Figure (cartoon, rainbow, N blue to C red):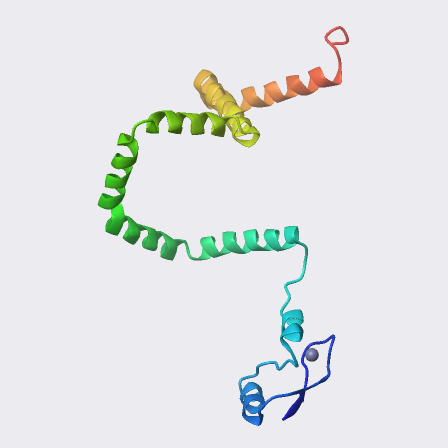
Length: 158
Ligand SMILES: [Zn+2]
């Protein structure tokens, strides 16, 4: 049976068995003349970055919506595998040179710019809270203000 290709850029006539066409129409499916047309019609729009951003947003929303379900699954996995994972961890740590290898990886890790920046931010907040307690926020604001003033003019101008 002939049908019109559902791809917007094609629209040519295609041919399939009559039962295939009727089944597709009954189930509300689209019919295409070729795999290329089907691929065109199902193509996901946007550049790699846009698609990545959409996926990140979708994943965050999915985790927010299904948090209880995800955490329950993690807990089941934890209960089922905890002993085995502890044994594997002990074996890994007992291997000769494992500590040195882990230390090298850690040193590599903390030198990454993103990790370094986060650590500096954390340390600044930690020291402020240790030294000024509940006034830590005020101290940090003052420090930011002084940094801003220093960047605008020299000491002699002040
Ligand atoms: Zn087509």
